[in-house]
Length: 489
Image 1 (cartoon, helix red, strand yellow):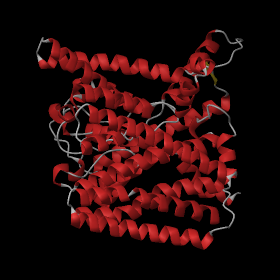
Image 2: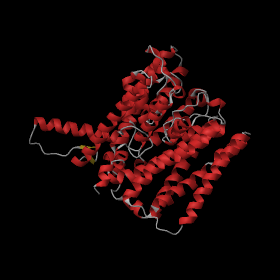
Image 3: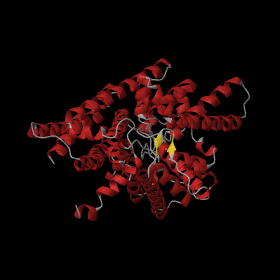
Image 4: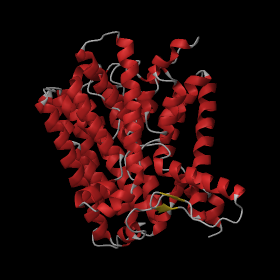
């Protein structure tokens, strides 16, 4: 218990220090009222966190495996519920609406109840964007340290199966890993921000969009369309950093250290980039056809829009370069790509490609066994061998995800959404691609699709549960909430 409290207090202190940036932005833009309110909340969080740290300093901080799971669940629930109080104060909205906004940011979902971001203080936008960026960092730590070592949903560590377990057992190693991951994230975000500045994007817009890109989130600096804010070259840059955020951190390490033998065997990332190119060509084609222009500049602009929207879709960011781009493709294709998601050990949502590859390979293996009953061979996807235990975990996660999505869609349909809108909202929020849902899809529908801020409080709570289930790999939540299991231990 002491270890859980220690890490919660440490994260609270780190969060308080990080949120000094939005406070400075508030005073820089002369948003004095918002700045004072924000500083009051941040100071209270910092005072409480530091006080708890001083009270338990010097005690044992080693986490057990069970403690790591509970720390994971408490972190993803406790911090948004507390931060929502600040958002409720800053935006003058109900607590449920504030809770929806904070959970959406922290899970990198990007759905928003803010109707017009231009009337919201820039400090609040930067606060939510930074929270989104921290949520992406928390996602990588959660997957690497807690979920993967336990094989949750078929997760398997790329380098060594005891890596996360040793991090939990030895606090110093855990701190070093988190610090290294933080340094890399800051470096990549700063690099993206610098490039956008050189391309003429305003500092505030570049700051928000660089954090959104790396976290594969969906928070925007204002109401202006992305193609207008970034231009065709800026969209390509943001698309590249979205792809970085949606690919495995272990694959990044292989690239940096140039471990060619591992790079050749890591098929997931190459399939991911192949899908990006194919979807980008499809988007570019339909955008060019819809524009009705034959000039060379329209070719380039259509291509850049295609690259951006494709990266946004398969990374589960859910952003569109301008309204109505996703509906240019068949809705079943868009929802399928969102459901598949990006790569494992990344900030993207969805099922993840390595699970899809594993289930596909295992299905082919079973079909071969029907034709050749005595065949002996291993089912594998690239260099990854899929044993029976791993396949059970993958299929369990897949089945649970499908059930949760359809149950969520059914509950949303009860909340006055038509079935297509309910299903789209359920998939978009489970895969942390909140902006992918919108009224643009309702052109062919007799019933309009409400915006997030137009939904009832009940519908917003259902979407919050879907966000959390998708971000925490679902099976981990079901295991921790299985009371009968813990009673037998």
